[in-house]
Amino acid sequence: DKQPVRVAVTGAAGQIGYALLFRIASGALLGPDQPVSLRLLEITPALKAVEGVIMELDDCAFPLLHSVEATDDANVAFDGASVGLLVGARPRSRGMERADLLEANGGIFKPQGQAINAHAADDIKVLVVGNPANTNALIAASNAPDVPKDRFHAMTRLDHNRAIAQLSKKTGAAVKDITNVTIWGNHSATQYPDIFHAKVNGQNAAELVNDQAWLENDFIPTVQKRGAAIIDARGASSAASAANAAIDHVHDWVLGTPAGDWVSMSVPSDGSYGVPEGIISSFPCTTKPGGEYEIVQGLEIDAFSRARIDASANELVEERAAIRQLGLI
Ligand code: NAX
Image (cartoon, rainbow, N blue to C red; front, side, top):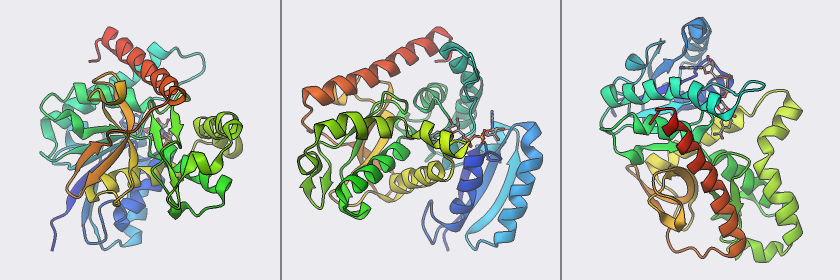
């Protein structure tokens, strides 16, 4: 029998946490034969709510759930963890400037990076979901100097899945027949969903659609602003779809992407495609079982895509300058 893998989840009492934990415990994250041990991190006032979630996890009697523990101490939560899902973050409140938002999140992701550095397992893989996810991931990575930088990712898989869904609606093709979609840049309204390399039943998606007006005025803004549309309709931000995307990201990171396809992951830039080195930006990535990923190389980028990739990367460069100024990295 396999030894349990320890998975740390922050913000466990939140709405994404509630959609995420049951799927991790069911085997959707690491596979149907891999037992998991959950460590749930929350702020002290939310620990009681977490106890309620643990009662429900118990009541599912998941065969793969080896143990669950809740704590308000990051050093305990990340102790021995091989996977860290960093979901809890400080949301932007009314009138909050970007610097205030980054500073408030620095107060969360700096100590969590330090705790990961000191206590996580050697094979730790971290996915940051809490916004501003890309820059929060950079704060955590920068405060974990002994952990390889490529173990810190931010989530743009929800955007990737949203792009596939929109393309499926437009073309009438099944989701399973759509491959090679890419999200470039930041998980923000500047992100660039790219269908110029995407395929629908093996055919180039942009050529098949052949509708520049739809691309510019419908597809791209719909994907960029989908989070706001869901808040508007549901009265709360995306939770189940965000949890699903987090499962997809880590599942594929650990278990590999299908041959011929890729996924969008925000990873530390190595300068590929002219994206400034060091920022955590979204790229098309392939993975192999065991946890290595590679940025797909050699895609042709035309002027339309170039301008959009640059705009989103520039936003990340500005956020990096702001967290440097605040002494967070
Ligand atoms: P909730 O407000 O429901 O839950 C967040 C939880 O985090 C709360 O229970 C809070 O007590 C906890 N928390 C706060 N500080 C903490 C700390 N220092 N340590 C541990 N826990 C802490 O938010 P939810 O809807 O679950 O969203 C969580 C985050 O995901 C938000 O930052 C949100 O913006 C972000 N999202 C990111 C997405 C992405 O694609 N990258 C999409 C969905 C979502 O908007």
